[in-house]
Amino acid sequence: MEQHFCTCIVTNCKNHPRNHSKGCDLCIKKNLKSGEIPACFWRQISDDLSGYKSYTYADFADFFHKHKADYEQKRQQRT
Image (cartoon, rainbow, N blue to C red; front, side, top):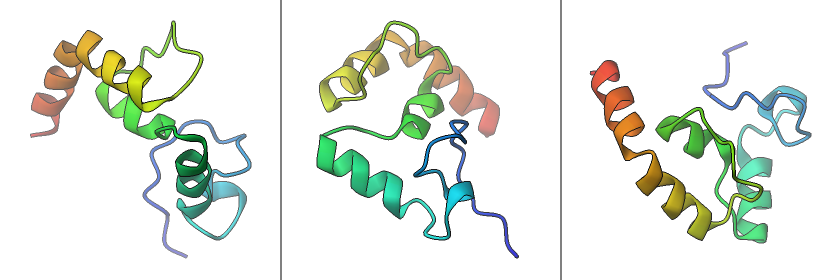
């Protein structure tokens, strides 16, 4: 069986692809319904999620601006 590409580290979440056979669909649907962005998107920018209690679009925008340097560093490491 092929490994799913999911990069989320919150494996105890019922929507994590390890816990069912529907890939990221359940996570994406849950986040769209609640007006949030999945944690894996956040972690692509920075692993430091401290100070955030919600994953709203507004919080994500704020997070990105605060951690833009981390994101640029990670991006350079991937290339």
